[in-house]
Amino acid sequence: MILASLHILGTVFVLFFIFIATTILFEISFRRKINEVFEHAANELDLKPEEVSDEKHKSKVAVYLIKRYSSDRFSNRLSDMIGIILYAVEIISFITQLALVVFITWLTFSDSVDAAKTAWLIVPVSLAFLIFHQLLYWISYLSTGRIAGEAKAVRKYALGLAGKN
Image (cartoon, rainbow, N blue to C red; front, side):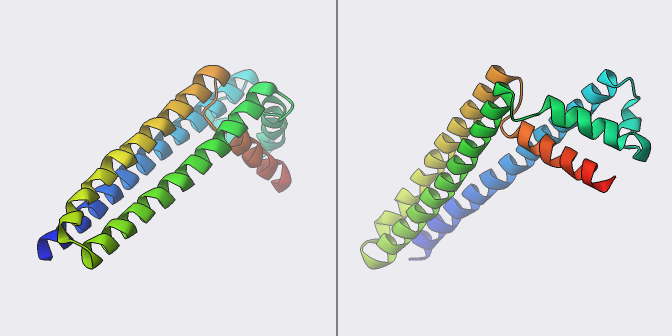
């Protein structure tokens, strides 16, 4: 029974590690992309990159970002849609993995200790969802020039900038 518990706990640990690692990597790439957005805004508005966050330029930057990332543009709408799809995939992935862990744990303690070994099959399921997530991410980037959800995030930031003035 101890070995069965270790199989299940090991699987949960590996899933948690995959989740933390991918979250950190996605956050880093998202921040890098947002910095590129601000550098592009600085170039378009003839500002230095550090002046983009200046109080006296906030309204000009906000208007530029709202116009550039408007939901009227097809590429922005596509980026937003893929962002919603990616969010749904993340939720489905989490629910699927959690359900599998609970099911295998229940099988292990109610039916057979040998079922615990199958817990390791959840890791490839997690990796398959991760690959699918990355595929959608790159489809968004290659088809729109924006990462999934970028337009919505920039619009939200720009509206916050415009509201502070």
